[in-house]
Image (cartoon, rainbow over all chains, first blue to last red; front, side):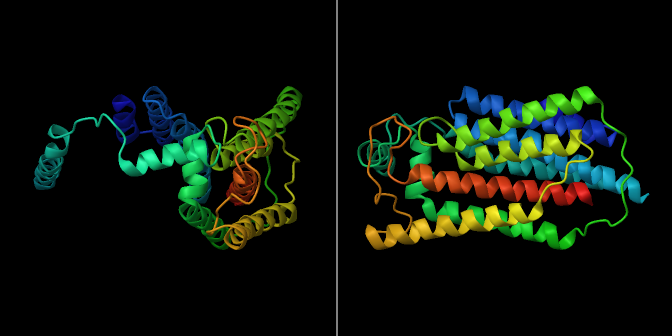
Length: 67
Length: 225
């Protein structure tokens, strides 16, 4: 998870950075599940690693088109 | 160079601030008085096996109403800021296999979302999680099918209708029982059944519909931009 966090900061490719930011959320949701709170884990997995990644990708796409 | 030193100093300072919290931390062995009240109340008075749901919908119902309002404002903001592009987008045609599979999966995903928010009082999850799952189903359709058009009028109607019903349920609770968003005006039902736990499933279902339609709206707006 910490490796993914460093990757999100230091990757030169923005796509790889977005994907590793999603990986952080996915691993965080696994941690929540292990710690015994499935409600929070579901929210984190669906919103953090699903919707946020997609919205970042949309933003990346429209920034690229502007260039 | 100097900025890097400042950053490191700042991080060390932050660590020193949080150090007492880490060193003094010890896990409490028994619940505090308020938590005991919630845990006993959700089983005895509200018949909800999932205590998180009874806290979110009933004891902290006003918070949940606030969260839904924040989400609504976010949707309105996205809709105001991002205008739809008029020019037609040229997109690659999607393969037959992907289209067929995604329309098959779409029904399953929507069903899972509806299951999550109707069973919010029995199993983990609830309105917010179910709504997000439904929105991800719509996202799959948007990404995989070129010619899918989402009817925005239906989205707006579902969103405002469920929001209104949610607030009205709260007002009904205020009139019939002791407080706003108090769900005790419906029968308790049997412990662990779908139709039990007063009005909690009703409230959570409408929250799920509202969240699902709002997030679909956001994704639709951002995808069309």
